[in-house]
Image (cartoon, rainbow, N blue to C red):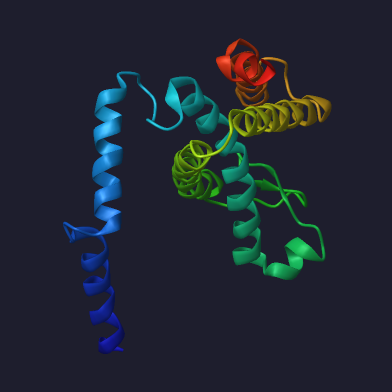
Length: 192
């Protein structure tokens, strides 16, 4: 038991504290870009993209957290077989009317990693698309915009309030991505 407890801190120290390590260099580069960006958002997403990521990821964080809570408290069979779901996460109520604690906490636990994953993915996609022809980046932006708009449409179809921040931010984010495609030189130079 003590043997397992010793290797984890050493592995974490090697991964994060090595000056020449890839993770350390990536974090330093990200921190530098964050300071130079000048906007309030994350460097790979920008200010608007950060807002969209915060709102949209909260939806998925709540879904993940609620599903895990049901599985932890009542077992996987209750979630997957019996269909027990959290129907009111604000008040911690299940579909059978029983209360369940910690719904907000479990949402928050998953929310931060999902925002970080979105930021990392944006950075990786950006670096991959730099090496590709411009039309590939244009298609990726259109696909991202379509996904955001489709997500928003699904939430509105399910009865979300028109001014609810999650579908509204998704709709605005998708529209802004389409606007960037239309107004960018990527389309004009690809069409020429």
